[in-house]
Length: 407
Image (spheres, rainbow, N blue to C red):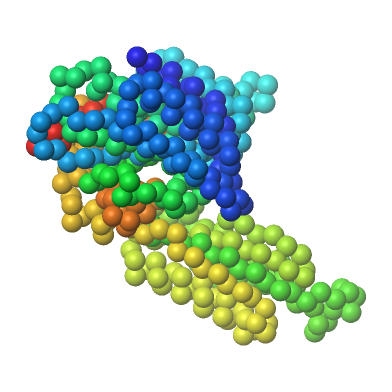
């Protein structure tokens, strides 16, 4: 059996970066390169109902091996990696028996991962870590999840004495740009509930996440020669700056944690004549989330009143807090909690300061808590993946499946 580390490293070397500027699904055709590799692998393993559709959604079944009536459950991960950092020519390297000191990722470019900057490294002293070469992201988000799911399924195939019901696995494109559930066929997937393997540090178990919206503001300025601009010019860039300063500084991501929401400025560009501003708006509490959107609307209305209707605002809801859909079926979280304890993983139930495919899938009729995949410092050159965390994730998947069949 190919072990989980070999699988992950193979997947990590395949470029699957998604593109938020594309309107196609998948947003990049190169995501099919990994999808077809995984499709071939699971066919070779003997899974049934294998289907890879034109939108790059891959599904398959591990048939039940028991006569008992057992709920069909699923496990889900995503193919794409973040557009935030280069995802091609990924060159993973294993640091053996990490000693707690600085890790030189790229000597030529003086790129170092230091516990003084990333203290989470110190929780993994003595472990083998997979790191980058300092020029790309690693892709543990979420290729670690894919590798763990497939390795767990292979383990069940190799150990038929472990009784289980029908298991569905699904892999999606474009999760990193908020579109992973856009074309996910919940009815075809056919599970009563599922788990996304898309969390971070070992032990994470999440069933609540941000409510999320994007806000795009287009500002039409009025450009005249600066030598004759008095009482005539309206500089779109200055108006954009006014908008930014109207939103509370203390409610930016760099100053918030836990259940605190934020306004996150993700893009600003333009000229005197026209400027564009992009925000993402996040909050766990739905009422506060709605108030945040109103704050944005009020700021734009104020500036429109001041400058004469020169700003256009588009707010689009992206996903909602899955807690509303998961709490009525809390036993699916309890299975994951019990499974972690059974394999000596300390459960850390916490809110996601972000979102997963599972958030939208929960509102589409597939309740879907999120479980750790093991990686840390996602979306950048300092991403790393402790190998024991991957192995524990595999154990958790197997144990969940076993517990569901037993109960």
